[in-house]
Structure formats: C-alpha cells, structure tokens
Image (tube, rainbow over all chains, first blue to last red; front, side, top):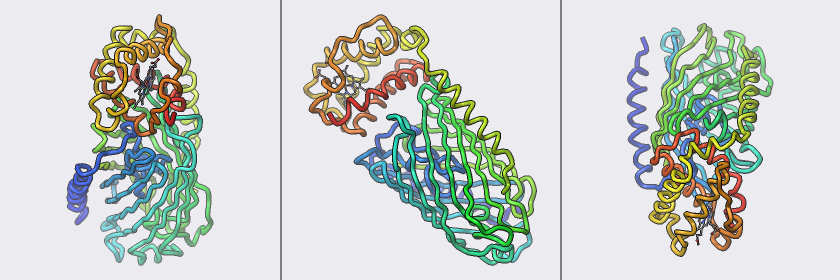
Length: 289
Length: 145
Ligand code: HEM
C-alpha cells in the first residue's frame, strides 16, 4: 500500500545517520548546553518538530560554528512524508538550512505518486538568549520553498510552484520551570501562502492572501536527556478542493549526548488533501556537529 | 483558516508560564539539602574544578588558580545561593574573573562540567536545575571581564 516510501524511509534514515556521524567525529561539537539545540523541524531549521524555534541548529556558541543532519519520517493513515535536512549555524547568530520533503500520495489515484519540494532557509538571532539575560531568544527567519511536482498542486488550484515564508520566533527556557524541571515556551508568527507546507503549492483559488499564522510549543525537560513537548501550528486554507487543518503534535526527544538526538511523536494533521483525520507518528534522527 | 483549537494552545502556554513564574520563589533550605549539604556541595565542586583542569578548552584559565581557595569560595557561594548556613565572603564575580576574558563558550563548558559533576555525585535533575537557575544570572559579571 505504501509502496516505495516503505523502503525510502528506513534507507534515508540510515544514510542520514552515517552522513551525520562523519562530521560529528571530525569536528568538536559546540559549547552550548545539551538539548538547547532543539530538535529537527520539518522545514530544516532548529525547533520543535513542526514549529521553528528561535534557537539555532547545533551547539555553536559565539565564536563557534556547528550544525546538524537529520532525517525524519512521518506516517499517517493515508500519507508518508520523508524529510532529509541539513543546517549550519555560525557564531550563534546565523543559521542556513536546506531540506527536501517527499510526500507519498500513491493511494490518492492522482497523476503523480509523489509530491516533493526543496526548502532553503536562513534564520538570524536578533536578540536575547534561550537561557541567559532578561530577553527570550528572538530570531527572524525566511524559507524559500520550491515545489518539484507541481502538476497535482496546479490541478488542485494552487497559484505558484514556489514561495517564501517569513517568521519571527521567541523562545525561552526557564531552568527552574516546574520545581526544577526546566520549561520551554516558544511562540512563532509566520506569514505564508504555502499549502500543506508548500507540497501543494502556494496560494490558491479560495484564498491567496498573506496571513499571519500562529505557532506555539511548550516543552519540559523531564531529565537532562529527555524532553517532552506539545506543539500547535496554524495553517492557511487556500485551496477549494479540500480543507487544510491546523497541525499539532506531542513529541518525546532523547538527547543521550550532544552528537545525537532521537525524536518520536504523535501527530495530528487533521484533514489533508481530502483525506480526513490524518493522525499518525513521526520519528526523526539527528546528528549534531 | 483551519483554526481548530488555538484557544487550547494559548491556555496551556499561559498556564505553564504562570506556574513557572510561581515556582521561582525560594523555599527555605530545601535546595541546600537536595544538593547534599556542605559535604555534597564540596564533592561536586571539587570534581568540577578537577575536570576543568583537564578540559582541553578551559584548562588554561585554571592553570594559575589557587585551587583550595577556589573550591572553598565556590562551595560557600553555592551554599549561600542555595539558602544554606553559609556566608560568601569572597570576591565579587567581576573581580574574581577580571583579566580572564572568559567567553560565552567557556562559560557554557564550565557550566556543563558542573552539571556533569552533580549528576555523577547523584544530585537530582530538579536540584541541578534549581541551582543552575541561580548561577545563570551571574554570567554577565563573569564573562568578558
Ligand atoms: C556560574 C559560574 C561561576 C561561578 C559561580 C564562579 C565562582 C567563582 C568564585 C566564587 C571564585 C573565587 C573568588 C575568590 O577568590 O574570592 C572564582 C574564581 C575563579 N573562577 Fe569562577 N565562577 C564561575 C565561572 C567560571 C568560569 C566559566 C571560569 C573559567 C572557564 C572560571 C574560572 C575561575 C578562575 C580561574 C578563578 C580564580 C581562582 C584563583 O585564582 O584562585 N569561573 N569563581
């Protein structure tokens, strides 16, 4: 039923792990405190799984650089999404990222079996810090997305095969949090015309405006190496052929050390491309360097 | 827009932020006891200073340190911050680190060594973070002096 992606997922994950292990061995991981790199976000930047955070990828502090490789696989009732991403950050100031997303739509009986896109991202820390000082860490980011299988999105009413997302994120970690269990909160505001991240193109027949979209995450560090979080991501709803719902997920991320992170999550994507109640899970592996 | 339950998000954010803020207040000497009292503090401070001496990126800063004094003063400071029965009578943080030009990275490295030392001596996650929350505000007087 799931065809090729059944194999793509595990293979991609293994390749990602191998690729990730190489730079990790060659480069001293940065100095920032464990788990402050966040987890790989679906569009390639550092964040929670769905929401970009103000933190930058890897553990680089000022005067250091770092980054990460990640592979993610999500499976809901009717869809498989595989993502590979890489990012580098310099001076705990600027992050550059790239991601490739492949959505298996075999089951929909459409002219294409897959939808895919490439995403290039940049994020700049504008002010504050995740833990130090008075201000939360505040970053601004941009994502350029280019859809690579535009036939189906065009049929569905999408206007463009590429587009930009702009966002501002504020993230803070309170170490004392819940009686010594550190608590993280993140709020992100995004301007986007992307349908289902951009996998269904940009803009649409029903709505073609830039709208502010709100995204948020809360997380608690249960242990030094274990983070439990919840995320909510508002979505546009531009296409007349099917409703696009907001997304949410509950994730558990394991940081056994600063080189490796494993995240598992339950995700609720609502209605996607006419398929109702897409719930499922995702797994991501990340290697930091 | 498909705004299913933004209200839930907002409510949980505020609930957690509110709770977090309320939890900041000090509660007697509970932290001092959770750190293992004077003995417990001396143990992890000793271990952290020892590992600082062998850390490739910060050892040079500790080369000329008077270890006995440093361990004693740092122990007293932590004991006092944790509302234990100690007075800190050492130098102010700016003075203590003046001329060292400690960077953000070196600061984080030392903090992780302290966390490692605490973890290895069996101090709980909660106590480690409660202490860390008290040390973090000192950073601005310690780095770049
Ligand atoms: C939360 C962080 C820190 C705290 C609470 C702290 C506390 C102290 C205290 C209480 C003293 C002794 C002052 C005195 O002699 O009266 C001291 C000295 C010193 N600290 Fe720190 N410190 C911190 C971070 C660092 C870092 C990041 C480094 C280096 C990477 C460092 C290196 C030193 C050195 C080398 C001395 C001088 C020891 C001597 O010459 O006797 N400290 N610190």
